[in-house]
Image 1: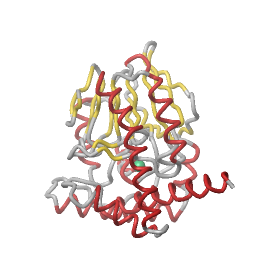
Image 2: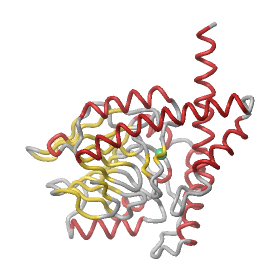
Image 3: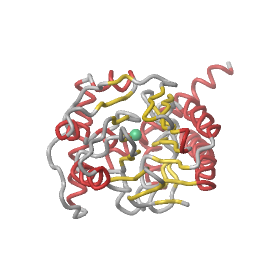
Length: 306
Ligand SMILES: [Zn+2]
């Protein structure tokens, strides 16, 4: 099944806030949230979490990576649940200390708030993004015991970013992979999500494939179960390879002019994609990064051949 809405996925596991950029909630004696969503949707997440937990409070929030659309509402959660323990990787912690990164996150958050307004989304939080500290530095293979039969195991899945962590819930075969797998856009286009390293992204996909997840939680739009989970992981490999070939071809045709290649790819992928979609500046930033990563990989590979 491919689930594209908020609500219950299986016993004690929920998609909360918005299917576009959800927060995942694993309920239990110590409820745990995964990812921190958009700043603008902070109240949507809060309402969704409270509907499930009632007067109980989430104990942990684990972050997959430090992009603006995955950490936006964290400081709001810290305000309403001061004891909430925020976990993320060491690299994620280092990024959150950089003034330049915080400014970029703030700018992209404000732009996305504007597009939510344009789309007519109600109950928006229009305050700017606020930085926060991590309470727990999560290492690969780190296990968090939530009860006698429920635990979460973190593992590093670089490629989209270097700070990326995926979270595996072995007792339920649930994997929070976020953008370590491709994004299933709302028009059915499958967007490969490697940004910083193509080969590391494929290596991370191999680790993910080996787990045999029965519930695969992507970063945006969809949760995949059973056969669709397996299919989506296989599709993630395929679209990454297709994207690599397309970009290599465009780079040759455009004589390494990155800007021309980015606009040709945007015409193929983004221009005709219906809203809601990734805001243009975030899409362009990511596409430029994917093209640059492939250009560097081509040059490194040709150096090695000399
Ligand atoms: Zn991301």
